[in-house]
Image (cartoon, rainbow, N blue to C red):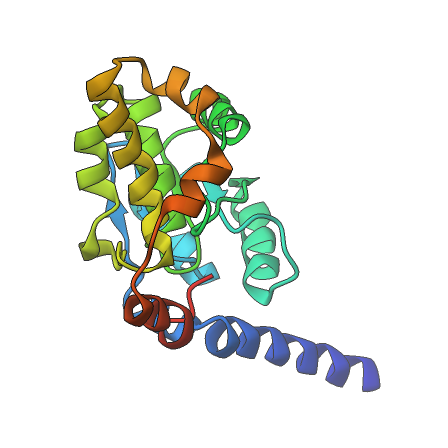
Length: 220
């Protein structure tokens, strides 16, 4: 009886962690789900019920978790649900306040080439980390221009606020576009050689926008 009650308490704690601490109650109403093309989708952190629905409706075979493997209840549910539904779960840690580095971009190239499609990529809110990886998906896998990919995926309609700290992601792509006009080179060549630390230091965000993203929206 004690073991049964302990298990029930753990399940309750995990659900409270998913829906209250991790703001799953917001995502249950608005999952921020959008298609990038006919084989890749983007969203916020999906719940077990949402994962089941995505597999049934879109035939999802792979889930790319851009929050990385972690100790959150949301991850525990996601990991267990993917195993139950026979979905491939790929853990890749993306960042919302740091521009992508070359080794991360190379990893994404391999990932996009080898995963089973259709696939879903997500972070917590589906706005910033998902936005930068979706942009890279268009550039690296769909061979779209940097300018077009940036406009499509790092967009306010997904909840991305470019004037906050997360605007360093836009700054990263825009810096390439600026330098490419002066000295043309491929995006990958530029990423391999750009100064990651210097670029981040040069970016300036707005205080009020950062307050909204960090304190009100509680973005990771």
